[in-house]
Length: 281
Image (cartoon, rainbow, N blue to C red):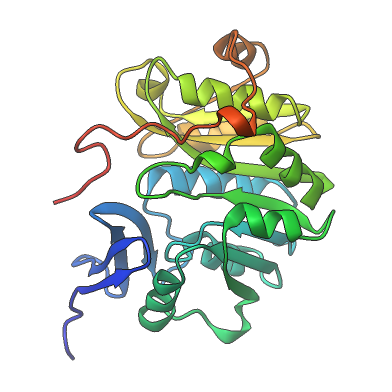
């Protein structure tokens, strides 16, 4: 049987590369311009390789009773890691995936196809534009994992954007976002302040080393109008190979400090990662 070989292709927003994992038979790493974007194991869709993806998975496992089908909107597609995970863990879920890079979507579907019965609908569109046209109260979960290169686009950081997310979510819905920052956390604190202006409950999941300002890294934001199951999330994230902390309540309010909510007119992208923060050889 032929060994899988890397696939490199120019896409709408850079150069995408799919590289096989030598240790897992049908697993692939997707990079765009050298920055890791997604990891998928076609034989094991519940395997989440990236730390931030595992943290998002922990939240997805706890937002409703195990196995219950959900209506989920994904902003940002990558290699469809989390849509595949939800199709496996919550069969019957209805999922919409919005990805601005249509050529990237074509590459992923061609090389890493999704089963026809997975309940995953793909849309080549701008994330905020799609969100603004989506029906009110149509999603149980909204997952934002959108990066232009290695930065969260500015138009997905404002109070107006957060209000659109709230509008599309059901009353007990949950918003999740993959963010990235480093000390002094101007971007991350502003995002927490922004979503605190719209949602009643917030939690933040990140590695202690990132929260202590030792390095640049990912942080998962959780926002909703109902209490987040922080006890279960704390147990699960602490048991990971790279343990994380769950911050909420007074600790999170202290972290936010005097940060102000972001308006469309002064929104900026997340900071550029330092060289080597996410790149691979």
